[in-house]
Length: 242
Ligand code: F6R
Image 1 (cartoon, rainbow, N blue to C red):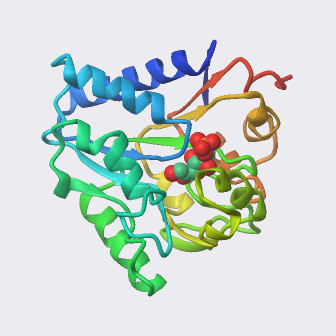
Image 2 (image 1 turned 180 degrees about the horizontal axis):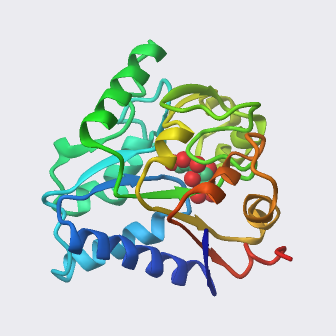
């Protein structure tokens, strides 16, 4: 695990975008594993700027996203497909057919997860996977549990996650209670991981992820075992480290 300590969210976003840009430059047909949420927004903005400056070409890129709310269509403003379209896909020259997000409209969980696993097997493990960290230690939507799930599965979101995400919905009742997510095994098979952590409210969980025991009760702690994992975190997020 490499820790890259930065001053603030702006610097975090620039550093993450630089690493992704290097990947795209060195391998123009890379598979990028992408995340949603507040953490990567600045990174996507910076990548868009680099594209607009003529420094990046997304035409051969394939993307696979970590997760999607079960029950939300891509047209729903809080769906992760909508988020990706708005923050990245519609702003760069990516081939839209090569962007993948689990199908939130598929009500048959087994069918959705199997289709996403087949897709991941077909395109291969991501060359670089971007991750955020939930307040309860989740990565993707792999919530605290008594075991690590290998591949894509349907999860019941925890109360902590529902509370954290309700800010995006009209009311708490509107937050979906389930989501489809890539498994921990799939994430761990990605060649390179970049984890973005910003803010004092993530300091306690980040300490557990980096310095605590590896346990499915803190899903992000498994990242200690990845051979090429870089955590980009700001001073506030690293403020509780020993
Ligand atoms: C999003 C995802 C989640 C978030 C996490 C942190 O695709 O998989 O694990 O990365 O909930 O969210 P933010 O960045 O909003 O704090």
